[in-house]
Structures are given as structure tokens and as C-alpha cells.
Amino acid sequence: VEDGVVALDEKGMGIVLSELDRLLLITDSIMQYEKIEALKERNASKIIFDFTEVLSRLRDEYLPVLARNSQIIAFDELPFLVFLEKDLIIQLIHNVFSNFTKYAGSNTHLSIQWSLKARKLTILFEDDGKGVAKENVKYLREKFYQEDTGRSGSQSHRGIGIGVSLIEKIAKI
Image (cartoon, rainbow, N blue to C red; front, side, top):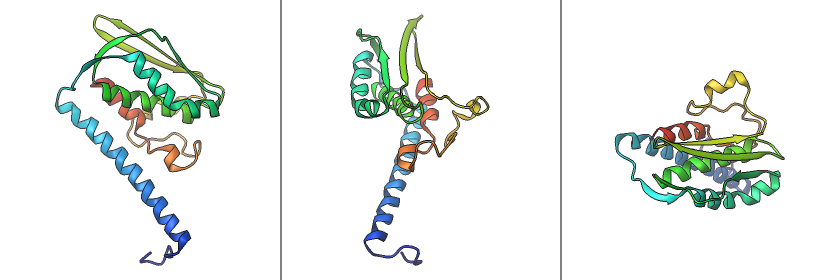
């Protein structure tokens, strides 16, 4: 406004508000990343909870976008108790579901399986979507990396490229 790039009229205020929303999204994402990064310094506060119940609740949150995209998220519905930091697992699942709905494409399926062997939990997320170019897989875990910024529209729909990096950090914690 001060430089004359945007006028202080209704259209200009819309642009300013849109940019503020974008900056808030970026700032919030970076703050979440740093919060999880700081967890390396302390033990996570683990509790016992039903992993399947969390998956079901989060899938339900995504039902409108799943229906719009003709996408399905499937997993064994039997109760499965785990001893983990619930908030981090919820964040991890949100990141996986969000990436699936944004990038896998229409008419795709996300399958979730898990196993527990020697007190080690393994969770497998597998979809039949478009995938990532083989030469770009090595970059996926880098903070702020985005394979194709044109695939999913606006910044708010696309994110800032820290989701996979967050997933990796949460898994390590």
C-alpha cells in the first residue's frame, strides 16, 4: 500500500487479506515444524490409545474431499491399542491424508496397514496414485521441497513443502 503497488480500495484490501492469510499459513507451518523439531530435546508424552479410532476419526474429517476426488482410505477397522504421543500421530496422519487427497489424483485408494514385532510398530501407507518422479524421490524429505507446485493450485491448497519432512521427524520421535 505504501509503495503504491496495492490501492486501499475493496479489491486491494482483498489482496492484502489474501496475502496475510498466506503468510499466516506459512508461519504456522514453520512453527509446527520447529515445535516438532524441539521434541528431539525431550521425551514425547506417550499415552495408550486406539490407533484405529484415530484413523477413523481423521478419515471422517476428510470424507468431503475424498468424495469430491472419488478417493478411498481403507484400513482394518479392528481396535489396535498403541503407546505413542497421540498429538504427533494425529499430525503425521493428517499430513499423509492431506498429501493423498492433494496429489494422488482421482479414483485412487490409500491403504493403511500396521504390524508390531519386537515392540517395534511399523505403519505402511500405500496408495495407487500418480506417484513422484523417480529422480525426485530423494528430495521428498527435504524441508520446503515441492515436486510440482503447479499440480494443486493455490498456496493454501499446496502447502509449503514440509509435510513429508514432518512425517519423517515424527516417525523418528
